[in-house]
Image 1 (tube, protein in one colour):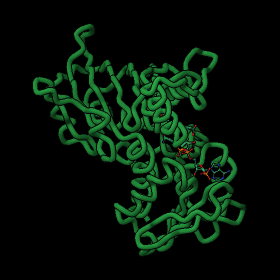
Image 2 (cartoon, protein in one colour):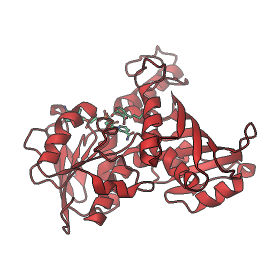
Image 3 (tube, protein in one colour):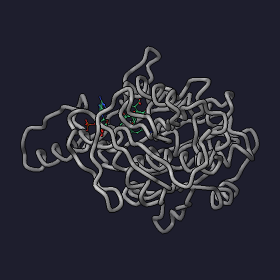
Image 4 (cartoon, protein in one colour):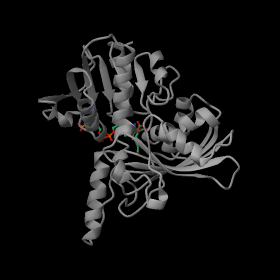
Length: 339
Ligand code: NAP
Ligand code: 3JN
């Protein structure tokens, strides 16, 4: 458990990346009680200074002694770095909030979305996992419905922004768009195909069952966070030429009948959710509106007419904020609350 203090020594590992950058902003914006901020990245970033409040903080490289004296470390430097350094950090008494998939499905590691299963934080043993961005926004929208009508099955298709792949992918979409609009040849370095003006039904590696790893993350993580292994989930994850904001078409089948109006009423007061559902006025959630915001936006709520007890909805959130940095900082805030 975190020792109660007025202010904490906090580290961001992967501080120069898309998620790490956002973590630093979120810590500052939410006035997290930071005594000292330590920033880590690869050797490529040594010498770099990053603004935090009125300070400029020098980026350091990681070694086995890096975590001495650090209370909370937010990791976003990829699963390989987490596998090596998260246990080292935890062993030196620091509590790790890990953004990678390295520990998400470990039985002794809680996988937490503060609006859904905050109390799971209480049984951590030094590492708490932050779920995949696509899973986070979906469970924020679905948990209130599961509580009253029990969800039996989820069919989800995602429309994921390139920022989910990191900084290089954002540059690639920009470059390819520029090239195409000036009739130049397109270079593909990050994705196997052109992403500009295209959709790629391929996120992360393909597995033997024909699904991608991203799809199976959604399947497995959803059950763990919702604390219900009986929910059946199937996912198709698609990369689209959007810079920021993941959108999802979510179809659910429930045990108990729930109407579209009842879902609207539930979600209008659900933590972390904002209803954007007035299709007659062209009001529905859009990635460009969710960019830089904290909420999960839900709209296009309607009854699935092909089954007796089904609901369709459209769920949008900023993948770098609620999908990654914000969720991690909210976990840290809960640690402080429970200390
Ligand atoms: P990114 O923009 O490529 O940033 C990667 C960060 O990791 C950079 O700060 C990089 O430092 C650092 N890094 C790389 N190798 C390192 C090393 N050997 N030692 C220390 N730092 C190292 O990627 P991103 O989009 O921010 O994503 C980072 C990770 O966060 C992903 O790999 C994933 O595990 C996780 N993530 C989670 C979600 C989610 O769904 N919750 C979403 C996106 C990402 P340099 O700048 O010095 O190279
Ligand atoms: O592609 C996206 O939109 C989300 C990407 C997440 C991601 C990217 C690289 C490695 C992850 C993740 O969080 O699952 C990982 C990983 O840690 O496996």
